[in-house]
Image 1 (cartoon, rainbow, N blue to C red):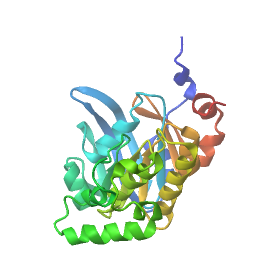
Image 2 (image 1 turned 45 degrees about the vertical axis):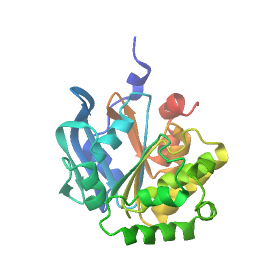
Image 3 (image 1 turned 135 degrees about the vertical axis):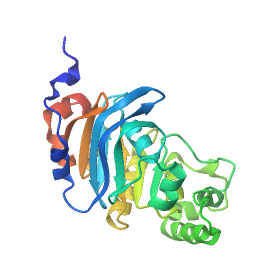
Image 4 (image 1 turned 90 degrees about the horizontal axis):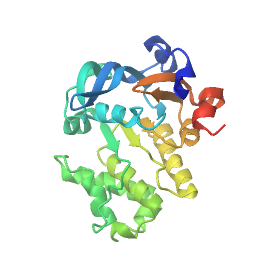
Amino acid sequence: MKNQYEVLGKAPEAEDLKKLSPENVHLTIKGLLAGYGKMEILHNFDLFVSKAQSLCLIGPNGAGKSTILHSIYGFTNIFSGKIEINGKDITNLSPAEKLKNEGIAYILQDNSVFPDMTVEENLLMGGYIKEKTEESYQEAEKIFEKYERLRNRRFQPAKVLSGGERRLLEISRALVMKPSVLLVDEPSIGLEPKYIQMVFEILRDLQENEKKTIILVEQNAKKGLEFADIGYVLVSGQTAIAGSGKDLLKNPDVGRLFLGG
């Protein structure tokens, strides 16, 4: 008997994926085989995303979505293949090098706020590897100017924040390093609808006004595809379907499997 995902047809080739990000390609993955220990999760995986473009990864649990973010950031074993940023090979750099030198920031899906530290102290933790601490303070001030929700809680412990405000703090903490690429793992997880809306509005602002390149994993496929310029549907460590976010929302197979349609 066929697996429900086996009816998705021919997987897109690298050339098909390139057409979705034809100009000013910022981050590229070529033929990646990666996983944990000796276990291979991603099989000959390709990805292309342009500067200031957003890409959403959707798919069933265990498909390898978070493993892609982990591989870009340096948390997996890479058996073969290449990851590049602006044409530079960054495959084997450490997470700290990727953050500090290549401008790649990773926003975790689990609650990574330090509850007993103040909002300001949490924010400054984002610049822990900066050599010049005054730069962290300058970036923190810009964030407080921009987000009144955080400014009003600046000297209070982070545990007083709502779920949405904590997610805002997690995103803002990553911004202290002035990254050009944001890897965002499950931004809507555990949030009430009004806060989900707020978080996606913040991400859109970062993409459109600050020209951040955003790659996100999102279990809420409808919300992720509504937000993203392009989407990849992952099945068993490979891309089964790719297209613009709008096209994937209209795709009957995607609707049937992931959108409740």
